[in-house]
Length: 426
Image (cartoon, rainbow, N blue to C red; front, top):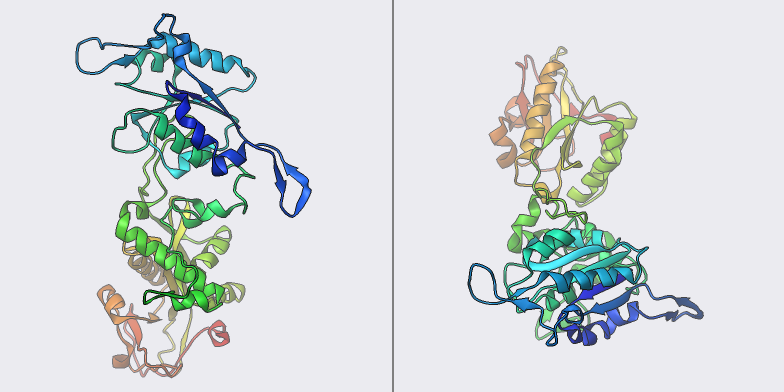
């Protein structure tokens, strides 16, 4: 990647671009494991000063604003000529132009990822009261803001922008792909990163969480995700609404980060992998995922629904056949198997909506009842009642009561409940 920086103070960039990772990215680097393997430079930096194109003996590039007011405005011609001269140095490589300004669109990780794929960037650093609007209209750069505050010039935001972009270029960071799990990145579903710990295990009476030293990578992964969601909910609840909103690298307007609608629909074969991942993420063990897979394979999942938002499966529910020994032979019960909602989407009523739609579909196929294991405080408001009042027993011998909603009157004695065969494998 080639990065051109247009600035009145190019000397400000020297220490930043000449240090640490940004410096190494612009150098040929030998592989520590094999010195014969050399990674060529992956980026080059080029500084351009508009003063060199001022056309006056004092190299003046600013003037008072029309209409009055404080400050000075950067004039059109020196900026334009400087940009054209920079572009002419390597004309076959078209640059994506960026102006860092407080009035630009907010910079976020999604935009950084898109810009890191570009072959060439040209960054305009404003100063004083900013650029004459006409040169921006002529050059049509993407205008980017670092945040809701104002600095003395665009050099510091440009440095931040360059650092954020260069670190994503393959070969720059030692462990390829490690940035995929940074805060706001795809590996964390655009959320905040979880807390990190290192040696010693105890410091000033504060201990490393026990799960991180357990060696159980599945539990560690679950703990980290829980902390990520927890931290995001506490500090940046806006991120839980969906993917980061932001402009595209082509300069198009940002799209809303929140899902406009959650669709509940019948599941199809294309959803199976997504539902499997959802169940593994929503429960502590993989038993639920294995159960649903077995129900499908045995043909015991006559009703399977998913909730979809932003093109992702964020919830699922399955109903499977059940039998009641000694019950009314006319009763055709369907049992509620796992209902799951992605932790990032919980608290939005998706689980209840899945259950209610599932009950409607059970009624459509003249199912007599729905049985579930669950928390009465959750299922009670949906119209479920404890099964003990109807004579049903728990075949697993545990303390959790069955819940039941009678869709049609249950006549005659009710006996022991039996699930579909797939349950027996758990």
